[in-house]
Length: 280
Image: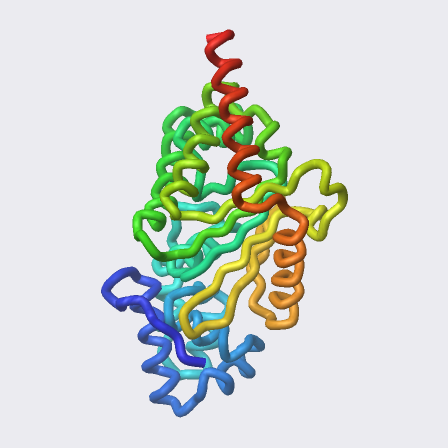
């Protein structure tokens, strides 16, 4: 399937992906044919060539063997896979950066792309109570850097659905929460995101089991990302992604309308601001 590759000059991964495309074509393999030998889909091969997905070390060795590249991919995949993000999230973060549309449900926290510095700091400090301040600073900086993709006025389309528990969980205290929720409202008012809330009154819903992120790309299959405690799974199997897309559609149907969601987020932010003013 055709892909929109990154500029090979943009990163080691993009450069290695361009080499993979060149070597594959030189060896006479289609993406589908090479994928069969690697036990992945042709789409997966295309995503590696486009720099959307990483070339894992075990796969690099197999590619070297199949394409007779003299160890080129094995030697270079470590540098190409270097990331400032945790290993379980790195590939998803890199896919997120080139997605044209992101739909995300989070049952516990404001999604990372929407977090303020103070909110992110409170989250990371809770996760890593004994980490140094420099470590926390680096984690916060990486998270805020991810949010730079919202600097474009049109891409990606970001459609988060928040559980009401996200609004009610006082991460960092009332002042931090007031700022964090007002930031979400600001992005929505700037027409940068579409946001919905699943109210407690909705009861059981399609994603009670956990978070879900769907990412869509120009001329490439969508991906689904499922995250747990220090774990993450990036899915590209079409039937699996299709099932998760249905889950998200059911969430949209169960959630408050965008306007009612905005009203709830706004009123909750005001409650936090009032609490912060009474107890500075």
